[in-house]
Structures are given as structure tokens and as C-alpha cells.
Length: 428
Image (cartoon, rainbow, N blue to C red; front, side, top):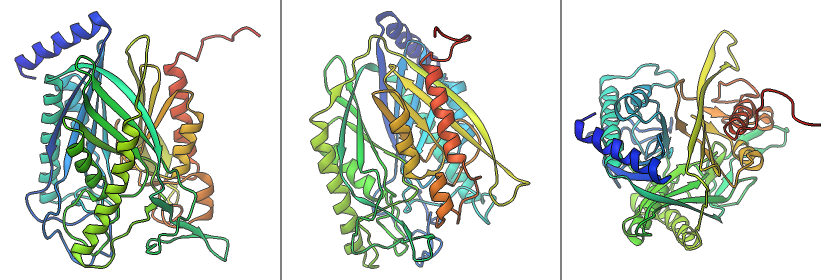
């Protein structure tokens, strides 16, 4: 860390501790590859590697500090992300021990992480990951240099822009319906979106708006080979034009079994990008409406508490193998609880957290790498795993019951952060 940054960090920490303030800082950086790369997500993509850029990809950082506790949330226009090196560097160089790297899961980003039958990275993929790590580290550092007294606010809205793609068939088993051009709202889904807004406590101006929603970012299909942030990018850029000075960030939820109702599958670029634009604009309009009703989170004291752990699960199909999954539970001001899961969790696991986490604002961060381990891939709930289908018993490797076990650990951690576990029995 540069000497100037050390002095700023020390001064910021002293101010936060002296005045019991929550401090925040924001920054962003473009991460669009400068060259053509294989595309993420679709095994049947028929247009080959990337052939251009429709809209840029970004990484956006929010740094929060309460007293001497610090954390960083980074949202990224990527399909997935794993980076233990970045986690270590942010801790060692910037003294931020909690880092949540949250991918939007757009399928119009480059493929650069090892997966499937491709267990190693080639030189191009390695270079791109190193570029991302450098840029994100710089963005977090930039956010840390420009901290301001912050106030948090929350609002909720509901809009069903997704459907549950796992449909029960005549034989009593589920199979995926990937294309739903008739926009039939098959259920169940979780249509709620939650806004977490960060305002400058001095000026009252909005500085960051985190939009939490659970729908696969796959409006663009396998006929598109241009880099794009998909509908979350449309939503973010549109809102940033209307909310001047506000960094809009998208956090993907438990979208493992939820596809978008708007699907661009014609192969006509202009028509397909128009469909993507429409879905992003619909979500942006509802977010803008809900943003007018944001209510401040009043807390008697500012605090950031967290518990990180790495859980080991058996491989569902090969019992000689194991899968290490890093999770992080965060409690902000005693009222906002984040459950970070590094993979494609089904929406019922998100509902479990929202129903059982005993806080005013429970947030489920799917597709979020935080504390070591690997990318979990699909994480089905028990019922979904039993009925099968894509992500339920096909293309998932984690043992049956892992989803519920992960949520049990998050809930146990949350109650621990709340001081609920005592060393001896209470009064009868």
C-alpha cells in the first residue's frame, strides 16, 4: 500500500471510530477484454468466439467501514469468478478482510475459468484473469481513498421477469425448458427485488444503489457472440443516467432455476438486442419507482461483522472426490444480513434465507466468491435435486442436501454474529 493511502486509511478509520460513523467509498472500472475470447455459458453457441462488443463490461466496488471493520462488495459483469489471489491481496495490501466478488452471470462475457473437460487455463485466459484482478484491486483501492460518511437505506419491489425452467413432465421427472418464447410465467419464482442504497450522510445525495434480483442473465442466447452485460447492464446504465452521481450495481440472487421471460433467439442482432433492452428497461423502471420509497436503516451503532468458512462436501456421483465451498455471512449494523454462496443456487435456497434469517433485511448473494474453495456450480435444494433436470441432477456435482447444509451454516453463523450462542443454558 502506498504511504499516502495508508495515511488516508488511518485518518478515515480514526474519524469513523471517533464519531461512530459508517463510511463508504465507490469506484468502477471497465473489464471488457481487448481481444476476442471464447464465450461463456452455452455449449451449443453456433457463432464461435466473441466477434465484438455490444456494451462494455464493468466491475464496480463498494467499500464499507465501521470502526476498524472493513468490507468490499464488487459486482462484476462476468459469468463466474474465482480468485483467491485477489482475496488475499485485498486483505494484505488494503487491510480489507471481507471481499465479496459477485458475478451477474451474464452468458455474454468471456470464458476464462477452468471448468468441465477444460480443467486448466490457457495463456489468454490467465492473462485476462490477471488483468481483472489488477483492475479490481485498483478500483477497491480507489474507493478506499475517497470514503465519505454514509447512511444506508432499503426498499423493495416485485416484478416477475423470470420463469422456473424446471418443469415436471408426464413421467413425474423434471426437465428444463430453456426457450420460452411464449413468455409463459411458469413457477415457482421469487419475483422480489431489494434495493440497498448508500447515501452521503453529509450531502444527502445517493452514491450507490445495489439492486438484488434473481433471474438468469441469459436474454441473449447462443446465437450472440458479442460481449454484453445482458439485461443487468441495460438496467444499470439506464439508471445511472437518471440517478446522476449514483453508481448502480447488480447482485444476482438464487437464479439457478430461473430463466428470463424475455429471450432473444432470432439470430438477428438488432432484434435480439432490442429484446434485451426491453427487459432491462422494465426492471429499471420498477427499480426507479421503488427507489423513491427508500427508507433509512436506523442503527444505534454502526458495525460490520462477518464469519467466513470453507465447507467440504462429497461429489454426488464420485464418492472418492470432494468439493470445497467457501461461504461468508455478513451482518451490517445488526440489521442487514448477507449470505454469500459461490455458485448457482436454486431460488428456494434464497427463500429459505429470507424466511429464516431473523433480521429486517436478509440478502442472498448467489454467484459470489468470498472465502476460498472453488466454484460450486449448480446447488439444488433437496426437492429440486430429487425431481431432477438441468442443474438438479444433470450438470451438478455437489452432494444431495448440500444446499440446505450451506443455508444451515449461514443461519448458525448469523445467530452467532448476533450473540445468540451462549456458553451455558439460559433460564427455564
